[in-house]
Image (cartoon, rainbow, N blue to C red):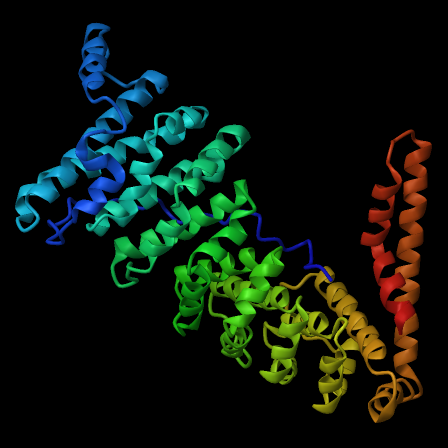
Length: 488
């Protein structure tokens, strides 16, 4: 079973307002050992670029009359990179020379911050990204994620978010791939997650940096889907997300953490298994249990709850996680949520549908804990509806409920449970059979109408291959007819 294509996490979120860097930070008293400098600059003997070129470029710029707004081209890029590398080197040298005198390297830190701010202009010219990579500036930029001064690391996070933003990379596929490959090859994933672990939600600037880090990870996945597996394989991001989701209080970063988790689990069996082994099923059940008898207070909190349920559905793909779901009393929790008839009602039905598919133990537990009464009440149309719920909402629930019933018949083949299931269809003068036929006729008519419409399109000389026509019929209700009704 696949996640409903109508809700996908590959669509970008509306971003919060851009983070504005704080005033120049107070000097950090942290020290830097020689290994950091050696790692990036080879003991200071070989900088990434020839800094003597900077003066030549600046002289040429003055002679050509430049001085106002600069054209963003390769010439400007080289100047920016050279200036950044010089400030980077000066800062490292100052920290190495005066490790116990922060006032002696504070100025170089401010200048480094200013150079990072200047680099943000590169987001206006993504076609220059391959040149940025060729200039070998990526290792230096990424290396600053582990800078002792977290304000510098925050600057880098903001820069990376800007450079990888969807609006920037749109229609620049090849430059985007070049940049993302270079970032990943230079361990940006490891350094981003190491940095996020030292950031605090109590500091507004660091809280904004947490959000920007998650945005950057999402941007990287958008360009290179394999990053979803890599970031979980190489880093402790999943563990960090668990900690964030466990927090009871709601904030924008918890919301975004829930979305990133759904993205990571959506198309990766490996991540689904990893998260299951980290007690992920129980973590998500506890998170959604907070809303079993109450509704989210805001639309953002409602979105977070949907993300958590999406993650739970993804997590229930591997059979071993379905077993964990049963042991964690997930079936009972979903039934309670249905009985409470709050906003999570439909999501609970969706989770049960995923859990029951091809896994009889869930079906058996569902019958044992008296879930049939609740499910068939919904099947008969007793669905809580609010004014803002559209007709399609009810149709989706009907499809899920039919799917659940089909799974029950497929998973319970004999014994008293089977008899209890069958007895539901003879109650009240077989009203549930009438309901089943009503839905069957409706979906049959819908598929017939779609088939006739497609035939008319062919008569009008509108080309459509057989696969596309079949998909159109599936969307109109053929899937429910073929897979679900004929299973009952």
